[in-house]
Image (cartoon, rainbow, N blue to C red):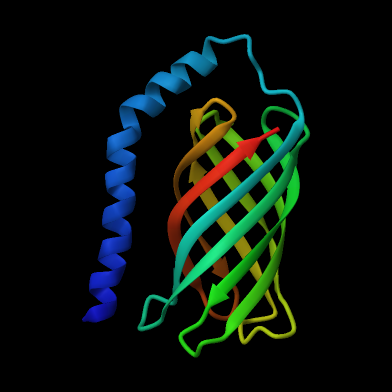
Amino acid sequence: MKSGKSLFSIFFVTICFLNCNSNLLYSQKQADLHSDNIKEPGWEFVISGIVNTDLENEYEPATELHITYWISHKSAIGFGYTLIFTNENHVDQELAALFSYKPVPVLTVNIGPSFALDNSKKERLSGYLEGELNLKIGRLHTDPVIGGLFGKKTLVFGGIHLGYEL
């Protein structure tokens, strides 16, 4: 029952952020669509505070770092590094090769393979899929992030990110 309440809490917080920011996101999307200010290629750094779960009993906090280079205003390549703080007082580490795509200005989708490092107790190779909303404040952006690792065992995660564009 505890896992159901925790999963509900993750989704509830995500829905609250989506609801609170929907008007701002819509206004920003309209401004971006009518603007001649198309993002030039450049670097982006993102840090996320997330919670991983296997949808059964295990919830683990994690920190995710992404470094991407935007090739155009819609696509980027980069990598991600994740520290997962396990319930056994152990820190798992993962690296992900990322392809990022912006189907609309306020949404970034990240996809790619994820590799668990040698000290990790997680699956060695899995598929990585993540979506993040982007409320821009100058060169900064923030909002909810949700995604998953898909392999022999599926893990989902959700949290908040903060990004900076150079």
